[in-house]
Image (cartoon, rainbow, N blue to C red; front, top):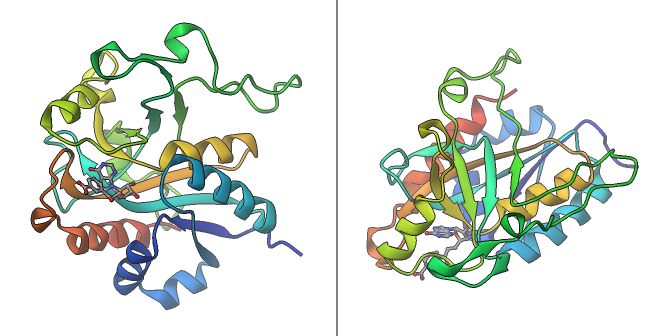
Length: 232
Ligand SMILES: O=C(O)c1cccc(C(=O)CC[C@H]2O[C@@H](n3cnc4c(=O)[nH]cnc43)[C@H](O)[C@@H]2O)c1
């Protein structure tokens, strides 16, 4: 029998999971009634794994946590951020400067259900905002409007990262500050099952930086753990 009240914490890889669990107060997590599962690496595995986990656990909400590449000064290496929305790059036509997204071509990635119970999805999915232990919006969540971009292949250099960072919509509060490889897939599975989805990512590296000696995975996941422990 599924426990319909749990929070399902999804983490892409076992390396991220063991590092993150090192920094979490595990007794507090267990008292909150959270369960934790891997969702795999990349958009396809994460969407499929999320759907499978939701169907078996029927959680009240899903939280995706892990590392990401920073695309702006607002996402410094070692920091962690909640995201208000996730967009995806690479589903459409062409690549690089020639890329045209599915939605810009008039295609929905998911057309929605006839009964309109599950709305259509283009290139963007809104995420749920975090609440504090009293059930109120976290102050920082109200002042930030962060967008995460989910990609099939990580940025390989600064030019690629800069193009992705400039995919923000028109106003400054809507900036694409980081890239990952799972959030859009997880959010799509959540949308299709009407499950609230929250995403927190620690910035392990500047997107496009392939020198792993500069990455700060431990510090970024410690910051993620701090964010998670503020939740109810
Ligand atoms: O070898 C490389 O140069 C390289 C560059 C970026 C990412 C990787 C990974 O194998 C990590 C992918 C993994 O972690 C998330 N992540 C972390 N940093 C980034 C990034 O800069 N761009 C996209 N994804 C990133 C991602 O969600 C995956 O789970 C290797």
